[in-house]
Image (tube, rainbow, N blue to C red; front, side):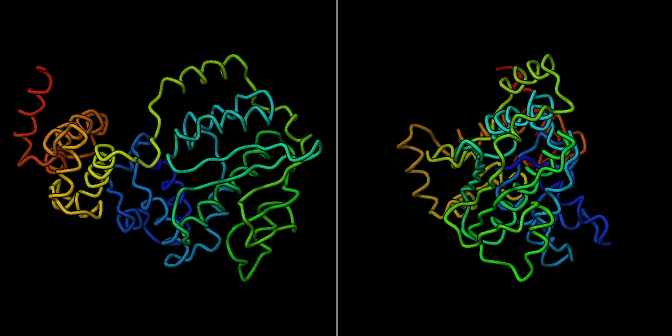
Length: 324
C-alpha cells in the first residue's frame, strides 16, 4: 500500500500536459473523493499505474525522475518534516529511513557506509519486475537528490548510480537529474553513492525542538503495513482495495482478488480462527473512521462502498457500532 500523496504527486506532474488529472486518477483506480486528503492509502498498483499511464499515454517523459525532482516540503506530510527539521543531511536520511512506512508498506531505503569517503543509499521495492517498479525507483532516487539540494542549499549530486533496469535510449536525463554520468544499468541493486562528507552538511531548516516533536508525533501514527502474510490480513487489504475501487464487497470478488476460490478462502479464515462475516465487519468499522474524515464522499456512495443498501442503512449500522 502507498499513501495517496504519492500518486497525487504524479497527477500534479500531468497538469501541464493538457490532460485532466481526475481522468488519470480514475484510470489508475483512485476515486475522486480519495484525492481530497493525504491520509488515505491506495493499493500498490494504483501508484505504479499512475506512473506508467503518465509516461506511456499522457506524454510525460521521464515521469519518475521529474516527479522526484519536484520536492516541495509538506507534499508527503510528516514524512517530509521529519527530514527538513533534522540537524544534518545524514540525520535527515536516517529519519526518513525509520519512517518510510508512513508513505509506503512495500518500499525501503537504507544508508550503508561503503568506505570512509563514500556512502551508498540502497533502494528496494517489493514489487514485480515491471515498468511501474522501475519508475518508482527512479522517483525515489530523484527525490533523494532533490530534497538534499533543497535542504542544504548545495548542488549535491550522486557520485555513482546503480540501476537494475535496462539502459534507456537516452541516458542524459538520468545524468541531469541525478548529477552524475557514472550510471550502471542492469546492476544487482538500485543504489546511489554519495560523498560521506555531504552527510555532515547542516540543513537550512534544522529545528531540533521541532524535530523532537515531529519524531514523537510520527511514532504515534499508524504505519502502512508491509505485504500481509496471514489470511485475515490479506483479506483486510483486499477489502480496503475493493472499497477504494468502489467494487462490491462479496466473498466471490475478494476471493478472485486473492487468486483463490470462495470455499478455500472461507477454510483459510476458519483455520485462522475467524470468519468472512467477521472480517467484513472489521473492514467496515475501519472504513467508518476513514470516511468520517472525508466529507467529499457522498453519503450514498459511502453506503455503497461499505456494502449497505442506502444511506439510511449506513446510519443504522453506525449507531449499532457506537453502542458497542
